[in-house]
Amino acid sequence: MPQPSCELRSFQAPVMMFYRSNEEDEAAPSLHHYHEGYEIYYLFNGYRAMAVESKEYMLRPGDLLLVPPGLGHQSWAVEDMPQNHVVVNVEADFLERLLEGADIPEMPQLLNGKERILRLPSNQQFMLDSLLYELQQELTTAQPGAACAMRARLTLMMIFLLRNLGCEITHMSQGGHKRKNDIEQVAAFIEEHYADPVTLGGMAKIFMTNPCALSRSFKRYMGVPPISYLNRVRIQAAKELIENSDLSLTQICSRVGYESLTYFGRVFKEFTGVTPSQFRRQIRSRASDRREVL
Image (tube, rainbow, N blue to C red):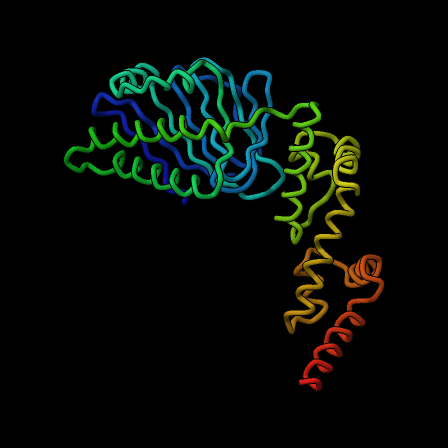
């Protein structure tokens, strides 16, 4: 979880660690800049765009970016979605000496002068959260042995990144396989945010494309345009709420992302052949019939 910014420049170990949210830096892009050391950028929640040299990425929750020294980069928030991230800056000489002393032959695979973006599965996100918390504790508390413990946590973090290179992703491309993966990300976004005010233009901005291209590619791979897919997900969620809750239809309409009850009813009928009220009556009638049989 985000914590106040903290900084350490002691123990002959120049390390800085910052927790930030878009409430602090808003949606304005950071200045294009580079560091003389390594930067580890980890997104807890929300979405954030990142440009490294000529490549652009869309970071989502659980994504980690490692930027080596000298690579220009900048980031910016997308839409008005809340997001929180942590940045760890480590001086290059210190990190390289630390890892050389740790004698990890495979480490050059990670520190090869190129940026790395890892899309971590949930179980690995939990492990990284713990490592970051422990690193922060060593940076902000003057406990005996803090310098040694901090170096150990940092070494463990780099080993963690090395072991998770299989989760690496690349920037948005036009290749067929990668484009399919991009569209699957859009579908996953819809399934996660269907209750929010999702728009085609908003999704295009988040995934750094234009609305027409997004709609065309999405339909090619998913069989329907993105807004039709959004409506399908919303109506399925509405059906489950009608069947399994006592919420009013007005409440369900709002719960699944619609502002207009009339429009909700029209879309519901397009997908099911009946209105929400008729569907509820059918559900109750079937339940009553089952009780009579019993």
